[in-house]
Image (cartoon, rainbow, N blue to C red):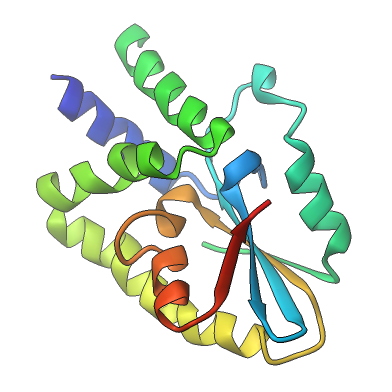
Length: 165
């Protein structure tokens, strides 16, 4: 039952468009290519009033950026609390387990369509951003950033320097 609730909560999080451009300690990374940098932030699309103010790292990346890019019940509440807790504390492994791993198993076609295919399409765009002088802040759903074939993994495979803020 918890797995189904988690999957439903993940589906809701994925379906709701970026309501909040919010990031936590380890949910903002800088990606560097020589002197060029972009900030990559993972969002959780369902935040509660108590989740504000946003972590300082979000504001730091926002202020350092010249462009901003936004990309695409009680038990359920506990699942959401766990997701937001992992996101806010920057627990990349926890985010992967909560957002990505269940989807891979329970809905592989959805995983391919919502995460993998989109991640692969974004990599060339991010690569182009790293070739210009602007410092962009790219915001995507947290599930796009973590885990195998997440944006951090794909960018690392291409040799980019990845650092948590």
